[in-house]
Length: 445
Image (cartoon, rainbow, N blue to C red):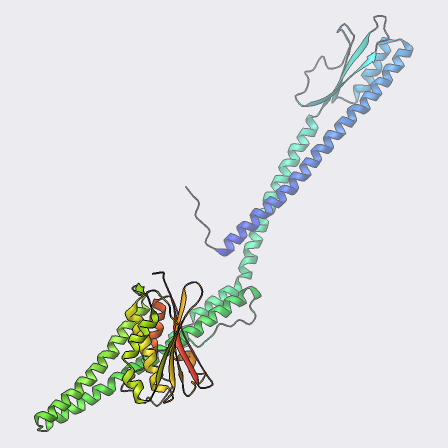
């Protein structure tokens, strides 16, 4: 059964600090323990070598006296204060010359050293010596040391864990402060911003990004409010006209010709409202994630020519000439591209300088990107209006002239069609030339 994940940031940090502390203290404790073991082993070896030298010295003195009893007496005196050590001397035939460990079993933990010494007795040969050092005391010390170091590591990790938990809670205070600020944000308080003063540097990018998000939300909310007002305005005017004219027709006795004119006018207004509704439905469909239906288009220039035929009469009225530059092919939604180009061309025709040339530019870019733009000569659009040209119902001309034929959704539809082709709209206006267009991502036919 897997352990439940720790969802608290303070808990995770405290746990990691505790683990790192335990590992760090454990490594230090292990180093101390190993150093102590090596030092004790070196001391034990040094003790055995030192005692060996003393035993050899005693044997040399006994060899001068040729007194075996005196030798045993000196060795007994020597080992009287060293009960942790035992010595066994054997002749060449295996008989024991001296053995102070015969009455006790050899310890389980011991260090030993073996050497030989010339036998000065009549039998001759060599004495085999074995010296044993009982290391039980040192081993017990190592066990106690190991337990102490392990306990210190655990206690240290626990102390650090508890202390770090409270320190992390204190350190996360700015985050809790930001959470409290966000709780106060509502739809009518989107213009408020998070207070980043006094916040640590690590949180400054997050605060900046969140404030930028609030700015975009505020702008979107304002656009939504403006959109509702624009929809009401666009639909109220034709409805008011139809209601007024219908009321007058009911009150007055009119001939068939007047009634026909009234119905024709009302039909025109109804078609205009139907156009607004259809455009809004299209934008809603596009903004909900719809994508373009792709089909092979061999020539975008030919597609642009077919669109231009619908605008010949309007362009001829102001003496405009049309020039199509460039060409490309790929898989697109041809009907949507025609609609976007028609909106752009209609917009350029309305605002182009009479007797000038309107150009449609088609250019292939990198990674399958293709740009389509309509360029006209005329009064430059103010830079403050350019970022909002593709907003719904937005008009750079605040007087709403030409509102009867242009309800302010044309460029919004262009932007939506660009997004449906994984592209984006763009607009530039400077020095009497306006370039409005969009990019699309082409698929190979």
